[in-house]
Length: 221
Image (cartoon, rainbow, N blue to C red; front, side, top):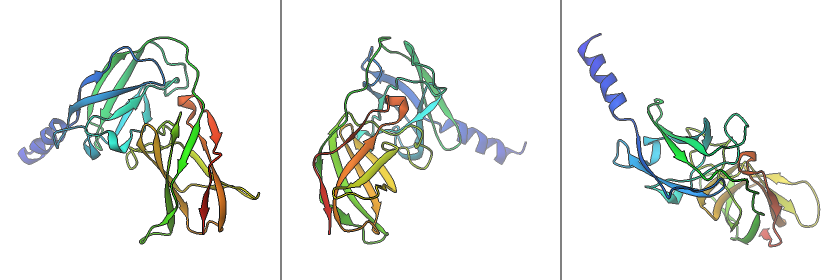
């Protein structure tokens, strides 16, 4: 192997993210923990880690939880089995380089909380895309899992729809971003028919799969 190739290999491996601590200890499934570590730019953020996995399955992280990503402990592993007392948390960059840390969770049965949608901000048309967007605030909302990935580490719940108040066909969101533990940003195509809508949301099955439809509405004029 030539010196330049060896130097590149060492550089890639050496720049992998490293989880140092997971706090607080003893949290149970569906509760969140904060992950602290280091990456190429000094913290676990952006594509320094790309995605965080728990028990072999990807999980989304709220956008505004950086530089200490917030991760919710799923009730199911990546292979579909029930989460046990010890979970493995890994942070990997785009090259698949990183580390794995064992976390001792409280091994107790839990039920997914009800989904509540308390606020829907007025929709706004994006200037440079064919989408409209709004922020949804509530409780019992979890990041994505099966829709999280290298290109979208902040994926929100995989199923979010606009439900016409007067009846008709639901319209699925084109993208959902998890902002905080209680809020998501939702995008719909601007072909959404004008009218009043409720929001339907279903969490990923790894987080219990609870769903709910809002009482509050938004109007697309």
